[in-house]
Length: 407
Image (cartoon, rainbow, N blue to C red; front, side):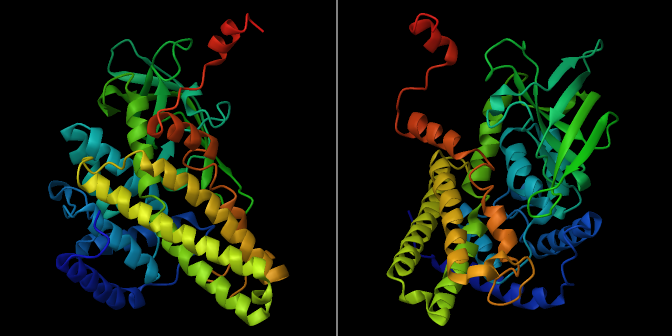
């Protein structure tokens, strides 16, 4: 595990800082969070600038428009971009952090050629169709059904998805469907499909979050025809491919958030010194504990990236679940601490005083979703117990009932 930059990495970091100092002052103000078309245009423009400068898809293969850089250089890019206050990936989140890396790892050459360059240029926006309203946090309980038509050339898909990120402006969706028997083993018979969002039969219903955003939608699918050529991997292999998607989501999807959290904690400590809450030894203890936790999480990020770079083919390992579990809970503790230090002002949704983003109330509400998004904390604990610690798997309800005589 390499903790310090090599000379080549230091040069890369300095070049990136110089580019960010030059280009960031030229950007227009970010649009309103309610204007989705303007947000797509803004985020796509930023992605195009990154692509032109050679910073798009740093660790993606050069043959698809990436830079072929190491995961460590990608980590440097994420860190420096956040420190400089560069725009977030925004509506490109699913394409750049989930779908694109999964396509590189699992898709056919034709599928990669069709989609990966467009994602990197910011021309193609993706959404994620995994969760379902009747499945809760148990993704494998999905019921959206896909059956082959008479020609065998198309899947006909019917079902419902929920929490579909950025569906309002997406061109394509990474979609999990059930192609196996409905009463079969729930982790089997799942297939990963690429669905064009302009396909007839798709209905979107925006969902309002507690913070007032409509970045999620319910998606209703009625006899949606998806070409078999849009299947990624073999039929029925979708669960394994979804685990690849989640490894990227949990391994690198929150890197910028850790940098943000460390900056926010420094601001909270400074504010505590200003308003005398620093005199409370419990506040000081909590600040110190969170500082240590975020430092440890940053070290874990480097470990996961180093592991992917030196032996996992660029795919984060199971340590990504440890990171996701601990960060999501630490993030909530951070916002709880912020509320106690700021008092009533922490309820504000439009306040420019001593905040990094100007909306402390919104950030606190947003933090509540961290232990649910990208896999609930309960799911992460199961993954850690079974796949990292080697503990026995949790018995199924059927097996437990049989062992207990049906009770």
